[in-house]
Image (cartoon, rainbow, N blue to C red; front, side):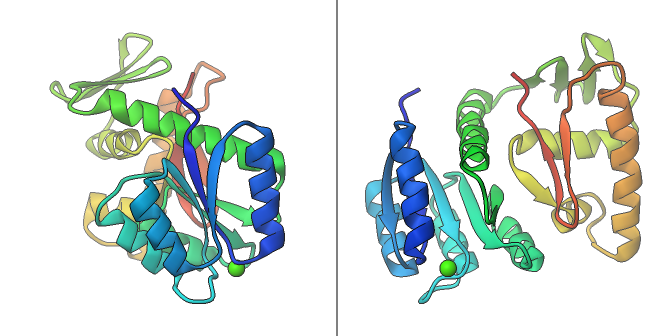
Length: 230
Ligand code: CA
């Protein structure tokens, strides 16, 4: 795959330059936008492959930018926000962002998130219309409604299977607690959140049991992500 084109949206020039320098020295192509209006314009005309989006912009709300981009594109959006803004991250993810970086972040973290997004693009291209989902030793047979680990059928409850399919459908993307409970139970009460934790724990025990492979990543206070295993 060619190096993707990255759009960096950030009004703080220090952070913007840090990201730009990192991308440049790692051979990525990039464009920058210092505010929401120019971000929308760049996203429309230049069609970037991945977007880094600061949530706190002078003119437009970052969540609003995500909503607008999502009306025409599924390009991975990685939100950049301050540590104290967990609620904002959740709104951003629910509006369709894929992932988040918390300020201050390291260059290593930035590049790691970028790789996750790139894997997400390539797996999305492969998986369109597929009847089978493969990730490491994990296979989901959507037609048969069952999942396998290293070729052995997993004994999943209907809720665990549903959870697994939701995570697999958006592999690489962080899914919020609200999104998951809403998809499974149609609601997101405190009791649903508790049930989600229980079902997730039992699911993880089954798919991560006798290997060192981690398929599901917990984001405390935010949600869960299925990692794309090499
Ligand atoms: Ca800002």
